[in-house]
Image (cartoon, rainbow, N blue to C red):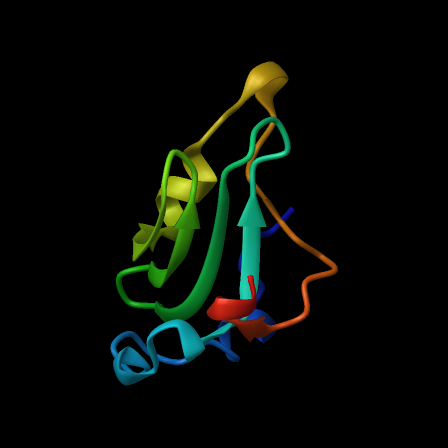
Length: 96
């Protein structure tokens, strides 16, 4: 599965463009690990560096940066990979 198709990438605002919104920023895409409870909700993206900003939920729940290349490199049990939620409906982070 392609994690970030061009049609989704085009919908993501540039990095730092929503800083003042905080948890009101809209998560345009969600990624998840099918073998655990890690989730990433992206609100911004920089195609030059392939870095997102958004909400990360794993050991803790926090706002931060994460890399597309890192998400693509992760392998779980049996070779499972991180996936994009195909049924995700964009919503503010405070509603996630």
